[in-house]
Image 1 (cartoon, rainbow, N blue to C red):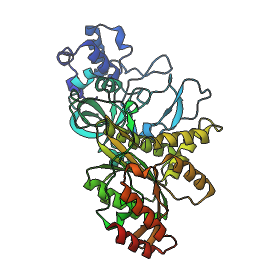
Image 2 (image 1 turned 180 degrees about the horizontal axis):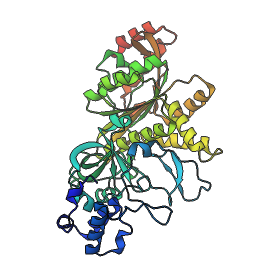
Image 3 (image 1 turned 45 degrees about the vertical axis):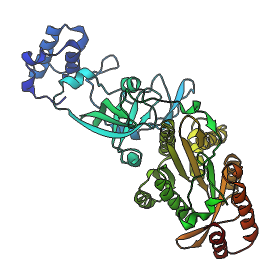
Image 4 (image 1 turned 120 degrees about the vertical axis):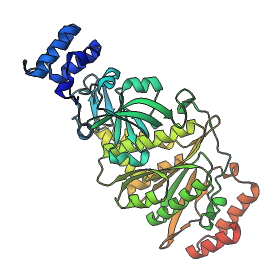
Length: 458
């Protein structure tokens, strides 16, 4: 507390209740403040403040020093070792480790209550917006600025009572009132959740949304460079598309995808992992929502970004919105999963990582009573391990797009790209046209292939 000694008077202190006085007593250094009545507690506080009594400082585990606000940055960066026993453990995204639930509490040194907010006159209150992530221990964090600003570490603590009261979930975008105590910000009220007032928001459970086959094609061929999506490899809303081939061609393709999605009011989220720091500028200039990690970021933080992006897409889908999730690339996602699961069990790390990757791919779906999530992911397929992964992903995806580089800032989609059950998206005439193009495009150069696309698809 930031109070001057002149403010600690019997008249001022008598205005507070017993619980508020106990908080004040702990901060000034009164020993065992819960053992005194109100009048006695006021007298003890005045004695400590005036210097007649030395402030109490605990010398062993039986006593405790006055509680002070912790630095959230230090708690964020702190990592715990794996516990000796794996019983009653869970994975902490904040600490980046497997920890015991009975001993772990990131905010164990933090004392925040509504009573404290009332008497701390020097606290600053303001309204911010951001994305929510909930810890398994009941607490949460609000990343101020949303998904794009996660790496800036501008955040606020969300108490478990606030999470329970407003039923906050991972990936929610909220407008909240925060109170600042020193270096830390605490959410004290929630004004809006995902664009709705808290009492007007009607939630749905993403896992319980009825999944249906895609029956609506995403029209991306306004740009001549995306003519292939007209019948060669059409992408339906709620489908999973797998992109392979040249990395630079993929970058241009994803850029065109983002532009066309924005034209059709499809909310686009870009998940870019293990990238060079300067690549973030290109993503920012595209104007889409993104979750970015550079190659120097530890795998635990990468998993944190993955979970936030996926859950944010789910919350939007629950509200009935169309979402496009671009993932670049899946090998980085798999490596992050393998590293983190290896900290718990060396034998099950690869299996658990593959299972988690399948759950990520299962996010792409079309629902009858909600929105849809169109998942477009990339893998380079250069090593044997990547080729095995590509075969697994190919079996789980609806669409496979193979790209090649045809120029410095250009790309071409190869004719062996395809979409499973394309008849659900295309009419019979378009299907016949696709077969005709593939036969004519067999063995031609990239330039000739582009000419064939323009001839038949414009």
